[in-house]
Length: 368
Image 1 (cartoon, rainbow, N blue to C red):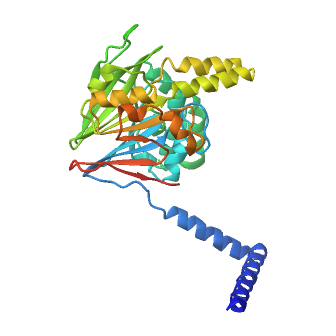
Image 2: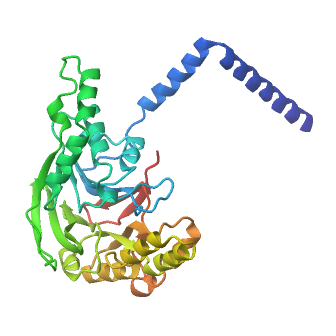
């Protein structure tokens, strides 16, 4: 038996060696193998289910500005029937969407919470990708006062790119209409509030059963900064953007099924800053310490979720980065004391399914 197994292994090794040698020397075989691989990739269906009986959310970026390999910056995809929306589009997020085969032309709008680079950095790239893949109208970009300047800045920065790609590929056929490559800004009518956010809300979209509400929150000195609530089929999700503990936000989120909240462990961030200081990296240390004044701690986010009465709390925009599973315990320290259940740390590719029948919220993962 042992001799037969050894002979089988040797035979397989010989076949592999022969196949490898053939591939290295026969151009036609190389092309056939490549074509098979291309065909397999092109036939891959989107991993995103379309459901008329559930509200879906996919986290397409869950890191803070500090880099974490394999993790994009702030981005969430909301799916309500045939309608797809993004909340923020930070660096690397459009790559995740492409790897999951989520059709960029189907995304009908981007809702920006505010204009920090880790929330808007991929806007230009995502817009161009959607256009090249077949979008035939300008991408709508919603945001607080100032969104027009941001959108026009990206439009200007990509003006040469639009012209180049149109010249490369349109051939007078209308395949890449230039007017569809520009984004259109939609200013949300909440406006600057001076020194103190008042927690005002504004329903900014109602279409085909979906209602989107902008919620003023507190991310000073960023004013205004927004959170968003999506309601569909009696189910709802609130995505905070960046914030501190802010009771008007809890009031606006009241009764939601899921609260997706950014969070930063202030204690761990302070340790990070102390280590940076000790290594002579004073600028980094100062920035790290400052961030605690305008971000919410995991325990505070749990308290906010309790105040709002949400079923589940999911953390995103996680700082400092949880670079190994072992660090989840100190990052969550104190959370279970105030909220023993209904807490998850988000990750890129997390899909949250909120069924219309009020059943159990389901969690799964998209993979590239």
